Image (cartoon, rainbow over all chains, first blue to last red; front, side, top):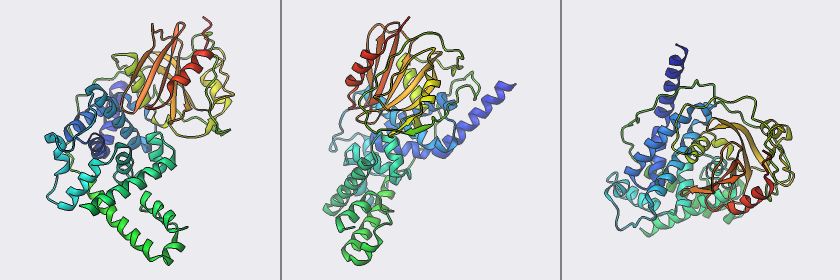
Length: 168
Length: 238
């Protein structure tokens, strides 16, 4: 009786986290992988791993960072398994192209392409800051960097996007 | 604050609200700030792609209770920020008294279990120069199990964890690229060094006597230096 109640509570806790953070997990995965289909696979694997490791998460306040860390590692594992290296912007697959052409909005399309073309080192902290609302200190923890390095990457990322948008 | 400093700050974080004195007097930076805020709106909208309907994968049954595997954050104290390497002398003397109950999950390999374990403790991987207390370290790695000489190193996290059904001291040190995890596994014998990793993580499981040590860091971390320090300084006594 006790174990079934505990299992139910565990599942409820898991569902609550997933309900709140699924969108963040998917978008983070999509911008890390730059591919919607891969993002779905990564999120599936991340959910499984989160389920198995749920008991290790003690504080609800850490749930978002914890889930995004799992997504980050799953994305890295996916690319390691698949041996995918670089993406040629001129030869995108359908699911890669889908990331760039979501809405018929020229300005947003151009911005998505500019973000898509950013180096991973610049794109990831930008996503964590703008989409996930992380502070630079939290981004530093997430990426294992010094805070100064994060500030530099964010500054350069925006400078590149600004330049790119001006060119277009 | 001058124009360059202000623009770097606002470009790193458009919510930056410092430099008010400079901003009031500098029309160019006022225009730059307005541009950055407009750019930020576009970036935010561009990143917010549509999300497909949630598909939760089939979740395996787990046999453990929710309280079997909790962890606590370590206490910390400030010490010298210089990290050279960890000099550790490990003497296995006895099996740990209290065995934590595992999660009941089957893993394909020791590597998988180690990576899954790290996923469960992301807060261990903090970039910090705040070392744990000697008391904390001694409680995680008691003398009955190991002796650690950490005078030359900076250990920023220590927790007794369960790997493959055995209690394992889980330590984190600060490497050149970021936090480096070290798992002291006196009960995990491996025949040869096993390297593993991905785009962002590299690791190795080193055989040492009848046990092994796992070292995991960010890609680009010079694990070989840490490996040499560990190999030189770890001695199993059984």
